[in-house]
Amino acid sequence: MTETGPAASVLRNLLQYGDLSFRDFVEIALYHPEAGYYSGPLSPVGKEGDYVTSPTLSPVFSYAIGNLIGNFVAQAGGEVCTFVDIGCGDGSLLREVSRTTKAPVRWWGVDRSLERVAPSTDLHFAQSLLGVPRDGFHILFSNELFDAIPFARLVMRGRELHELWIDSNFEWVEHEAPEMYDDYFASNGIALEDGQFADVTIEWGALYREIASFSQHALIVTFDYGYRARQLFHSRVRRFGTAASYSHHRVTRDLLANPGGQDLTAHVNFDDLIRAGEEAGAATLFFDRQAKFLLSLGITEHPLFAPLDDLKPESIESALELREAREEARRLVLPDGIGEDIRVLVQAKGVSLDGWSFQRNIIP
Image (cartoon, rainbow, N blue to C red; front, side):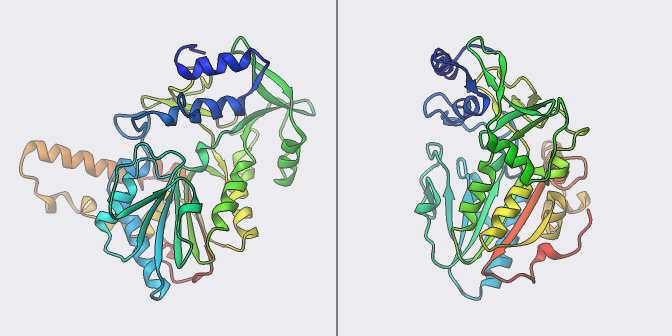
């Protein structure tokens, strides 16, 4: 571990009193109010940051979400509609979608830190769902929210589950795992093999249950990296778990390096989300790849997907810029890019269960 920076100082002080669970290490490294990765004045997302997300990669993502919002308003039958971006960051997706979408909706962003959000007369922001109006119909949207939740790192040793902690030398040590993690795997029907690692948090289901319980009339749309349990915890494919760190668009497994200076993430168990939503009264309408979902929303109707001869750039420079923009748009739906890696879960509560554009049988 690189023992520099404010987060490292916080961790050193805590480790004077004993080992620290990796889950708590992640909490401090990402969310400490002064030293955490997400507490800085600059957004880590985008081409100039550490990683890109679908909304920052290309404007065609916002275009597709705008089509979904239009479909939702049509289904709502004149009810007041609210689009809520949960984990909105600096609010860039809200700004783009509200700018290009003519549908009459209220725009709300929710994020635990709103320091990077620019004031707006048309957009509203809150630090939790408690600040969002509950009346009417809601689209409860999130993109890469759940893979940013602090998680535990676990390993099976023989027949005993161990949890990874950090000692005062900033080295990995193992402690007997709390019983709640044994219960977690049992409830998912998963038996880890000897030497197999897994990265989990019981907060996945808890947070999703909170979201699904917020509104009586909602479409809950979740984009994230992850799989259902049997695929996520496959003993051969993901024997060493899914935990990864991101910095300057490079991904590594050096999870303890530069705390507060790199992102830490793990893939989501979508079974937790599906189960939590259904327990809150929501019906599952869609679970598949991002590419399939965006294609069903008509993303290829955006001008960036038009034949190149139809676009007629004015100069060589604009032609090169257009080519790059087209390639970035295609990455959202190509089978070997982000369109394949991210999954989309849609659940509905108190709204129509059919008639949605994403229910069309589109095969990318």
